[in-house]
Image (cartoon, rainbow, N blue to C red; front, side):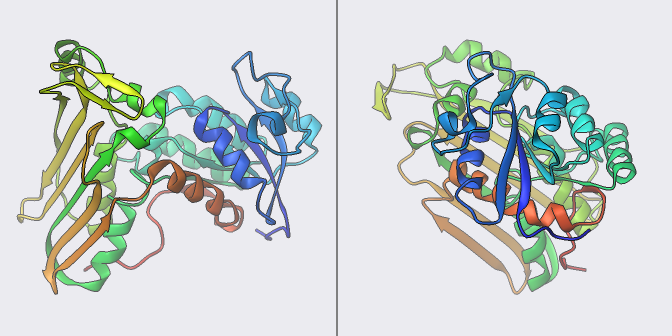
Length: 331
């Protein structure tokens, strides 16, 4: 597909991340925002500029059909309206059938072929039929615990184990993420929801599955554990007050092992009182690889960057659902 000199983009979903992507997209010279869609009544009818701190006069519409008709052509859609495939499949289909290449922030799209195989095949088929591409952007999943270790594995021989750890300071993250992590809630209630994985960080298991597929390790089932991090004393930080016995955040681990002993192990802890945030990756190979990001990547800003920078990539990629990228990995 020919790369336009300036890509015409549509913004679908204008929550905190969607609005941030719109704001950053309108700062670039490569992208031109021409349409916006959101279901929040307070946003419908507003201009994109009023929501995303710019001079854009694009009016936010409640439906895709009206937005597309007013735009007069869209190259790339930024989809920021859900995490789970079951909730967003219809929206993605509509965007692609309207001729949009799609960059989505939906976590489960990083690698849906293991847990949502039928939906993945449908999405891939719709994309190819429409001649467009569908790509999941993001940091975790999307980079730190899946695409980055897959690529780094090409720098070592015979890797046997990949371990990734993240320690995230929730006091410096957006309010919506704190609520998602149960900050300030009753520990017993949160523990019950953790037991059935009805809360927490989406896409964690998919990161393991992505990495296993990239390394060609037949790991089988992924074992995971999700638990609340409970305050032992009163914590006041980031404008939040958490009493002793209440929740500071969540700790999530996932692990899978192949019949030949190859292991993938991920650990993600997000807590309000984190004193030493970091992102860390270790690959046991020849030579061993150890990568550490002191203070960690600022997840919200990095997510915006990941999505905005992906627009030219999806506009020129071969049609289909783009999961594993064309990068070398270990044999």
